[in-house]
Image (cartoon, rainbow, N blue to C red; front, side, top):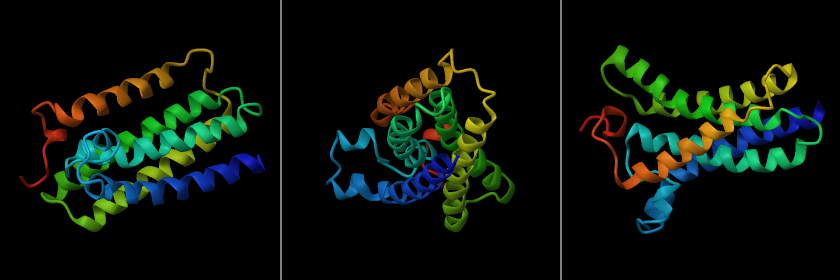
Length: 168
């Protein structure tokens, strides 16, 4: 349990820091085409979901390798946590902007922080509860589908709201 708590706290800070830095990587790379698949290429809500998804995916690989022997259902718990954190971004963003009618940068940052903290808290609770079925890797498959969508839609985004740049 101590290891799980330790990696949950480390993971939270890892994703908060790397996710924040991820916001600038594409620009710092000189708008490198390949880098764009993994880091936001614009200010759309969809691209901001990458701030949580890819750092959590990376840390989840590390956490899985460290804790897999102790928790048979860790893959499903980590996968569901990635999905929760990633999809909380648009849920929280569109909820508060729907109420206010506009976005506020400090609330955008708070949305990111709350999404990351909620994701890791969910992972922690799911692993401890042992209520998640680990024999069917549905959440892991969904994570892979979302990853494929991030890559596909980076440069070929559908013309729907989540892909639009707010305020444009």
